[in-house]
Structure formats: structure tokens, C-alpha cells
Length: 343
Image 1 (cartoon, rainbow, N blue to C red):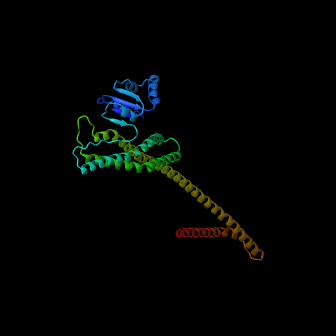
Image 2: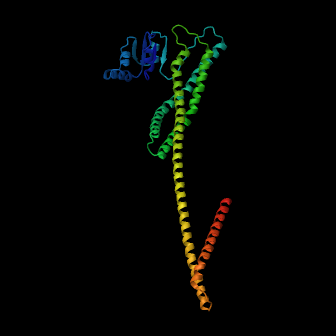
Image 3: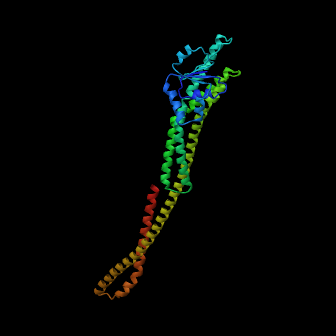
């Protein structure tokens, strides 16, 4: 096997870790990359890297990959080029033109749908740390709610902020996540249409996708489900806290209404007391007027007992004043009722 370009080293590591690989030539045009690996192994030994550099099956060649392949007399079963391009080798074994064309079309569709589905993977990776932070903040807020710690208004404001952040994440990612699921179904369907049969020593395309493609789709689906679950949990916590805030407000309103009722009763008692004092004062002044009138009549020559007349007039005056006050109260109550009915 020959690998052109070290790249990130994933292909070299994966190929070198398989027992089926009898020999492996790595051709890298940039000398510092190989030197950096060797220097890293010396400064900080890593078991996997150390074993890879000392593997007798490995040959590290510095130079241009195409020039090396043209000059070397060796022949390779697999040539992998680290140029971010995927290549398929299709061996025509008695295929008709229609069969070959249909097979090529399905292979191209599989690769195109796979790449389109994997567009959601970077978004899922970016969302994952954000989800972890929101989950930690939600756990702290839920614990504060359970222990009745902190101000309810502040907790509700923080939950509202978390809900907005979760909804923002859903809005930014759900379109691509849904597209990933749709493309994944197309990939599985196209692989099924190939009707592969396992050949000894050759990995089927379905198995390759199960190892390299399916975990990425599972990651996307997991992140999507975590976002939806997080949205439901935030909504439930907000609902619980809102209910508690509403109950607290209802209690405050009930206490306020009870206080207003007590004040109204006190005002009524005070009003009744004032009315009683008013009746006494009016009786006093009216009795005085009656006394002045009686004195005037007595001065005119009528034989009158002023004190007797004043004393007899007090009950009559008191009854008249009380009747007038009661009538005025009924008139005021009727006016308030008519205004309430109009409203």
C-alpha cells in the first residue's frame, strides 16, 4: 500500500493498524512534517506514534508522490492520496453498458449524499460545547428551584435566557440536521440497491459506511435530540417556576385584599362614629335654635317654659336628624350601585 501525503496522519495510522497491511510506503513532499513527528516522539514518547515510526512494514519517503510512483518498480494493491478526494475503482466484470452506468450513478450518488449529510457534523460539533454549558446552567437553576434559593424573578429571567439560547441553537441547526437524516436514508437505500456480496479480504462499501459514516450521523442525531430534550426541560422548569411565582403573587394579592378589607371596615366604623358625633352636634345646634326661638316668643309675651320646650325638642330633633342621615346614606348607596351597573 502507498499513501501520498501525510496530512493529519489518520490514514497512515488506520492503515498501519491493520494486520492485512503487509507493507506501507508513505510519500511526503514536505520534509519538516516527518522531522516534526520524529522530534515529537523523542521529546514526548507516545505509544501509538512510537510503534508507528518503528514498524518494520513502514517506509517513509521524502519526495513527490507522482514522481515516485513513475520511477519505482514496485506495484501496490492500494494507492491512497491525501488530497481530500475519494476515488472508486470499478472493475468491469461482464457488465452491460446499462448495468455499468447504473452502478456508476449509484456510486456517485452515494458519495454525493454522504458528503451532503456530513455537512451537519461541524455544526453538531460546534453545538455540543454550547449544549454542555446550557445543561450545567439548567442543572444549577433547577437545584436552586428545588431548594427554594434565590429570587424567583431572577431565576425566571435566567430560565428565559436559557430558553432563548436553546431556541436559537435549534433554529440555527435543525434544517441541516433534518437534511442529514434525509441524506443518510438515501445513502442506505443506494447501498442496498448495489446488492453487494462479500469477497474474501475486501471490505464491502456497506461495512465502510457503517464504520466511517454511520457514527457521524449518529453524532448529529444525538446532538439534535439533546437540543430538543433540553428545550423541553427548560420549558418544564420555566413552567414550574412560573407557577410558583403566580402562587406567590396570588398570596400577595390575597394579603393586599385582606388589608384593604380591614381598612374599609375601619373606615366604615370611623364613618359611623363621625355620623354619630354629627347627629349629636346637629341636635345641639338645632336645640339651641329652638331655645332661641322659644326665648323670642317668651319675650313677645307668650307664657312659655323655654327649658321644657328645649328638652322636649331634643328627641324629636335627634329622630329627624337620624332619619335624614339614613336617607342620605341610602341615596349614596343607590348612586354607587347604578354606576357599577353602567360599568
